[in-house]
Image (tube, rainbow, N blue to C red):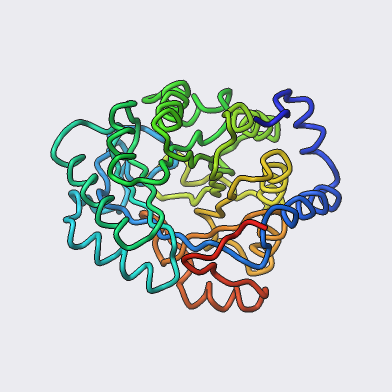
Amino acid sequence: MSSFKNKNEIKKIYFKPLIDLVEQSHSIHKKHFKTHLIQASKLLSIKTGACPEDCAYCSQSSRYETKIQKEKLLDLQTVIFKAKKAKEEGATRFCLGASWREVKDNRPFENVLEMVKEIKKLHMEVCCTLGMLSLNQAKKLKKAGLDAYNHNLDTSPEFYPKIISTRSYQDRLNTLKNVRQAGLTICTGGILGLGESHEDRCSFIQQLCFINPPPESITINTLIPIKGTPLENQKAISVLDVVRVIAVCRILMPHSMIRLSAGRSQQSLTEQFMCFYAGANSLFIGNKLLTADNPELSTDHNMLESLGLKMKAQKESLKV
């Protein structure tokens, strides 16, 4: 468990001069990870749109008029085809996302369990993000072969009610508890640029530190304003704020994977380099991240080559 539970301790680190903060985080990153290796993951939307929640950033909410096309749950053959293609492209982790508020014990969930079983046969890590999850459902996913479950906290408990009203912060924490209790690894994180303050970011990081043991994966997303959502006109934050959050997470949770997620399409090569240098060691490949834009695969290959980085191979370890 991280010893940094006191917000004042976190703030002392967070508000360090950025150059000192990143120097410290990179030193810790090098101690625990091979810094020239990056894990490539692929995230597939297996059920798109028509979500009843009111998350202010989300294009898939049924409450907002966006250009997202609703799609029913993909069939097994399509998902396996996509997984095989992702593996050929260099992904060693395949993630399935469904726009459900919560998992229900029904045929679609049984179909997802079959997807997990078949993807595991490809010798890939498998992660799901399907909404709220009971302990029994988490155990079923574990039995099917699931490695990780993603359920983001999104932001601080204090700022959260300004973004979402249809699911409580405690609901999210309960799902993470069920994930851990079932023996799955936790993938959780947040979205930066929702309008939150630096204080909120410190509080969000504190919530990650409360998880025992710390999350195996921390996702760092940057808001992509979607036309039709309440946050469509939200002003973009500086990538230096993103770097600062990554650095603090790396210092406080040195063994966690930090996954640079949504928002990379808005970042330059130099800005992404700063994120990796500060402690991020995973990215999502493919030109779509659920429904959001993401860099083309060729662009990512060129970026990694320019930075002297490479995607880790299937059996290659990122750990030092």
